[in-house]
Length: 64
Image (cartoon, rainbow, N blue to C red; front, side, top):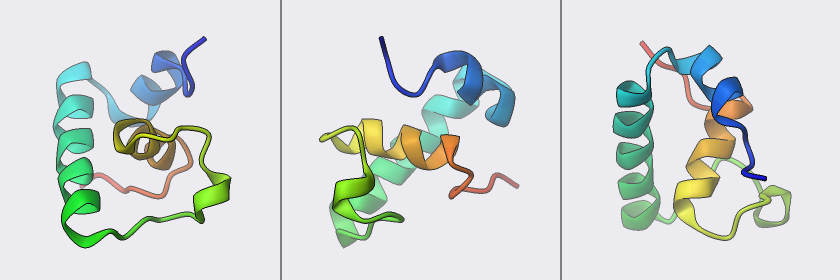
């Protein structure tokens, strides 16, 4: 099973297209600055894409 679920993420974001856009920008930020919203052991995923999705699901990324 994929964590976090796409249904939970779409309730927070609204559309798949916006979700992809936000996640791609956040991953680029992570790679450039090496800054993460949570501690390393709090993430379920090892990859930055999964970590960005987790940050969205935990309301750490706010959309305008």
